Amino acid sequence: MEIVTYPNPILRSKAKPIEEIDNEICQTAEEMLDIIYDAGGIGLAASQIGLSKRLVVLDVTGEKTGERVFINPYIIEERGEIIEEEGCLSFPDVMGKVIRSQYVTVIAYNLKGEKLKIEAEGLLSRAWQHEIDHINGCLFIDKMTPASTIAIKQKLKELELSYQNNRAGVS
Image 1 (tube, rainbow, N blue to C red):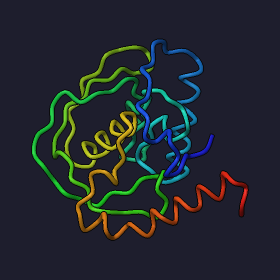
Image 2 (image 1 turned 90 degrees about the horizontal axis):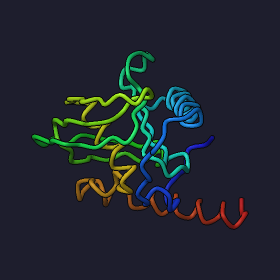
Image 3 (image 1 turned 90 degrees about the vertical axis):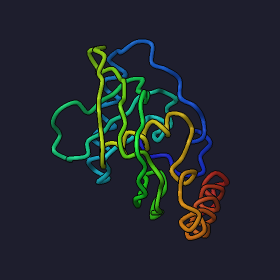
Image 4 (image 1 turned 60 degrees about the vertical axis):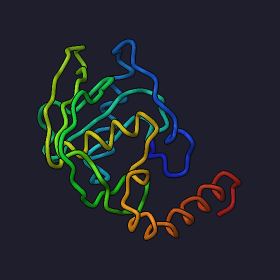
């Protein structure tokens, strides 16, 4: 399992809901957690590993405790606004200021199929919004401030060229 990088088209596609939580979903989630810990990330959506599934793993603490795997998450409430710098595992070496809600309430299911209601603010709120955007085909570059959008333009062109070269077998 590898992290899919921009501009792979799956990053722009809306992921399909998970109908059944089976061993495959559990195994995928475990591998996704390994990826975020290995990469030093705090969250990952299944679309970032090339799977069109509404599956998200999150751990803003890095301590491998508590609920970390979420099925079919969606935001039911957003409040406030904050602009902070953000990055993404699917965008190596790209950072920029992103406008997000300061507070969110999320509904999701755990691996036992239990419904969860999660209230989050700060970094956890930002992570939720970032990963739910991913499963909806929206990327953090879409929500950057105008100055950040200009600042990353060249890096995005480099990622696009690298992607095209990899698909064409050029090194």
